[in-house]
Amino acid sequence: MVSVLDAAREAYRAGLCVLPVREDGTKAPAVSSWRAFQTTRPTLEAMRQWDFATRTGFGVVAGEIPSIKIGASVRVPIAALRAWIDRQIAAQHRG
Image (tube, rainbow, N blue to C red):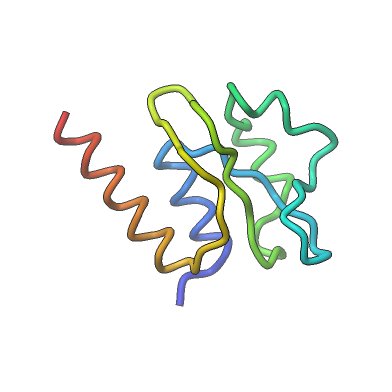
């Protein structure tokens, strides 16, 4: 089974804009404002500070982030997200 930390790392390496979500069962971002992340991904330092190893999940900002377009934000099993990330990475390598 893939951990939340490993899945968040893979998503970030694939170019996605990964944010922590609140631990109250909502999909709400656990950041003061997510609007800046509509066009800019978090820094590696921010990713470390959010400590995904202690979280039960994460969110991905929908919209256009440099070089990747994401059409929707949904809750999916980590295995499905991992498969999607693998396909995105493969597509980037093809050109």
